[in-house]
Every structure is written in structure tokens, then in C-alpha cells.
Amino acid sequence: MPASPIIHRTVDDLRTAVAAWRREGHRVAMVPTMGALHSGHLELVRAARERADRIIVTIFVNPTQFAPTEDFGSYPRTEASDVAKLAELGVEAVFAPNANEMYPAGYATTVSLAGPAIGLETDFRPHFFSGVATVVSKLLIAGFPDVAMFGEKDYQQLMVVRQMARDLRLPTDIVGLPTIREPDGLALSSRNAYLSAQERQTATTISRAMRKAADAIRAGGDVEAALAEGRETLTAAGFRVDYLVLRNAETLAEIGDLAQEPRRMLAAAWLGKTRLIDNIAV
Ligand code: AMP
Image (cartoon, rainbow, N blue to C red; front, side, top):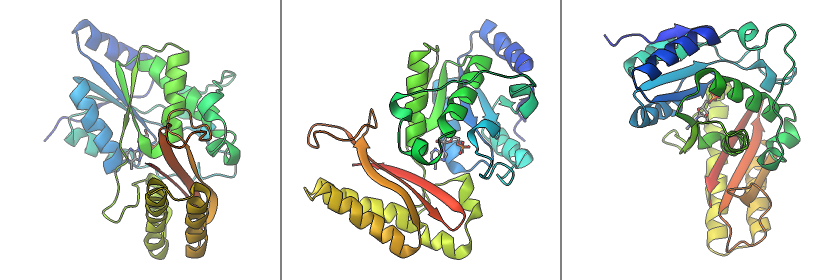
């Protein structure tokens, strides 16, 4: 049986453990998550193992990145099975604080960004990136890892975290890893558990519509026409589309010169009560 990771509930306990590792000369990686771990999260852990010999996985459903109308209350919380999966991978530590440890009474500090945080998700979830940036900065400052792993699944979030780490001169390398998908193309997400059997089938449309639009753009087709067709495909399948757009892959600004700039297609759409996001390189 693999050893279970040590579960730390407080920043002080985590700091004490990391300080001991540092005295022994270990390299430390952090993998921030909200739990309900799936193979996408576990790939981040495997990639962390290639870059460090001590791994902290954080499990914290962060209240400040949810609006009052969103799914904070119903978000899946499966700590025991998460910890068992992490034990299989030999993870040394889990940091799973409660909300009061992260945001005690009187808490008053948030991190807010412009740049890559402008638009896209922010147009629909204005609270979201200040919540993410605040909690990620708190987690990175709690553990001061050498490296932290994030998924391209949440592409705008990855760009926001990179910008924040650069701007605050955090001493942590931010590593982004490719999206892990189901065999039918659906990006793995803890929120896929909300989908009914029928919605789960329909959900594949999002990656299919994006790939088709990306192929058309690569073949020299009109960008707006390809994106409009993608949106129509999603709407016809029963989605309510928040956005399906093409952006500069590094700045997330609108594309000026199609031939010269790195390109990323990003989408967010509702299927019933579930909001799905996805993105691909173009
Ligand atoms: P979450 O628990 O959903 O907040 O995600 C924690 C981390 O796992 C984030 O960096 C996500 O981008 C990453 N992640 C989530 N789903 C996937 C996936 N399908 N492939 C790769 N990384 C993922």
C-alpha cells in the first residue's frame, strides 16, 4: 500500500513541512485544485513528479471565485477518494484548509488584474479572476513551491496566473499542461458530473465544433464565418453560448494580424444548468 499523503489544514503546518523539506535540499512542486480529482488533475501530479521530489496538492473549493448564484454549495467534495488517488501517485502532502483558515473574519485583501483577465470569462463571471488570483497567490505564498502546475483546460486562468506570478515576482515557475480529454473529445472537468446522460452525449459537440472551426481557419477560411458556424452548431445542439472566439494565444487580445500571431480558440457554453469551457490551439 502506498503511504498516504500528510494532510495539512493550516498555513503554519504547511510552512513547517516545507521548511523541513528545504533544509533537506528537496525541490517542491504545488498542484492547486478544487478536488473531485480526475485524470486531468492526476496528469498535473505526474508532471509535477518530473520536476520536483516533494509534491503538495492543494484541495480547496474557493468561495471567493463563485458568485452567489453559482455552484459553490453543490460543487463535488470528495476528499477521502481524492487523497486515496494521490496516495497511489506517492504525493507527499495535501493542503486542504477550511474557508476560515484562508479567509478569517476581517479578511480584506484581494488581488485584481487587468491584461489577460479582461474579457472572455470576466464578461460573464466578473468576480472570478480576482477570486482565483487571490487564492492562488495565497497558496503560492503559503508553500513557496519551486514550480506550480496548471492545466490549459482553464486557459485564461493559466494566462492570469502567469501574469500575476510575473508581476508579483513570485519565485515559482508556472507550468501549463495540455488538456486531458475523454476518448470522444470532451475535456475532463469536475463539473461534467452535473451532466445528465443525454447532456453528456451532447457535450462532445463543443470540442467537435471548435475543431471544425479551427480547421476552416487554418485552411484560410473567413474567421468570423467559421466562428459563427461553430456558435450555430452549438446553439442547434441545445447549448446557450457565452462565447466562441479566436484570440492571441499569449495576450488573449483580439487578433490583429492573423498570419503572424499565435492563435487560440476559446469557448464557454451552457448545457442545461452546467457551464462548460474549452479551448484549442489554432
Ligand atoms: P480545478 O480543480 O477544476 O480548479 O482544476 C485544478 C487544475 O487542474 C487547474 O489548473 C485546471 O486547469 C486543471 N485541470 C482541470 N481539468 C483539466 C483537464 N481536463 N486537463 C488538464 N488539466 C485540467
